Image (cartoon, rainbow, N blue to C red; front, top):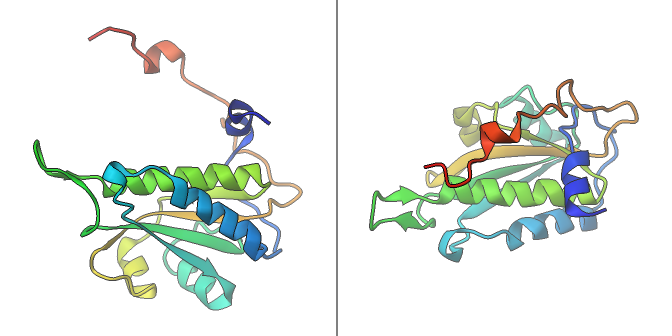
Length: 173
């Protein structure tokens, strides 16, 4: 499958099989995140692998959007480790870096037949408490994952896109 086919076929899975992910599959997904580009190659991402009953129960106290997934990746960035646009406005790269890492892992999972949903609907304070995050770690996304249930399907509107002329501008400004 070429990249555009993969990107088009991938959807947010909201119903999973109870089957545990093999370690080598999970490691392949994590490797894709490690290969992701980050600003100045500082690699500020910090990824917490959440598996097992206890970890998933903690996650359920942070979000209602686990959808029965047997695993999740909590993607954070270390505020003390990210690059900053110091010369101009000091903006840290951590949130963008974490998003790029999450995207790489999400698409790698899809290439392996693993379904994911990118969850941003979570309580950051609960995440910090439940997972005892260091103060410098900023949670950005939760990537729930597993094998899609046989009756899993894209949400209505998944394939609806705005016209290109609303989103892309050539030499307009």
